[in-house]
View 1 (cartoon, rainbow, N blue to C red):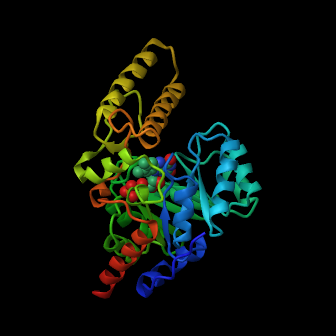
View 2 (cartoon, rainbow, N blue to C red; view 1 turned 180 degrees about the vertical axis):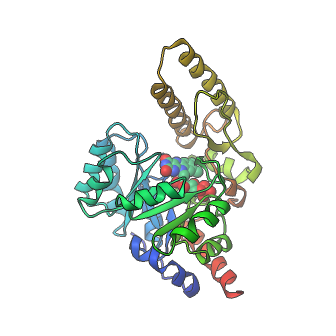
View 3 (cartoon, rainbow, N blue to C red; view 1 turned 90 degrees about the vertical axis):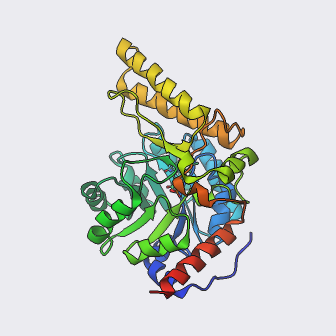
Length: 341
Ligand SMILES: Cc1cc2nc3c(=O)[nH]c(=O)nc-3n(C[C@H](O)[C@H](O)[C@H](O)COP(=O)(O)O)c2cc1C
């Protein structure tokens, strides 16, 4: 277990104070859950460096999540969270695993939290972090007990909404940030951007792309090389080919895998036409496609046919660096920007 010395960034720390107190960390910087990437090593490294690591449960079984949480606890004594996908068929068993380990923060991602899920998490005194694409839904989730919100713009890697971070921040922060904790995600590659969102009232920030290739990340070397070579324009959003099949767009590096996804959608749309599958099954098939394709890229290093999910900030990721160095850079850049104001 390694602890990095406290970094002095007083102006940034003052703006992050609410978020850091909520997370129980030194800095209100979350590393967003990334399926296959956010496992024990990266999560513990982020938390040990004063940020907030989040385990990506993805499609894990309760037994696998149990082992991952235990493995993470062996590497850090600092707080970390667990990201659960709301459509997981064993969501409540996964929540029970979090309860067993007394996980302090659970992030519910991928859709509106199903009935009883927020209550089940709060029952063991854990904090609930949610996503919401509209202010109305955000308010509803806060009323139902959510403790914090992440707004994530379309610049982000992975599954995305249609609106950019800069617009979401302008819409949500003035309305919600005084009363509630709102973290901003999507397209943050440097500390200057972090400082700007903090000044607008954000409690903290969430980054994924910037941390995916840290030295402590177990992503395959070929996956990391693909990141280092890529520019912002290479991280493209998937295209929906059939208006009847609402596919949540995914931002990933352009390759044969992104083409295969187009073909997959046509195939699933044909199954819908033929009545072989219903809409729920069709959408689940699409999600399984992504999970498999991401694994192929992250774990097997097949960056041609796998899905190299990456945000537009990928152009700012040019080499492998320890998590602590990335956090130190973000803080120094933020502090310098705030100093000039
Ligand atoms: C490779 C990759 C995998 C991701 N997987 C997930 C996931 O499983 N669950 C989730 O809620 N978000 C996922 N995300 C989104 C991140 O948690 C984070 O919100 C996002 O990366 C922030 O935007 P940025 O990429 O511009 O920094 C993923 C992002 C990437 C790059």
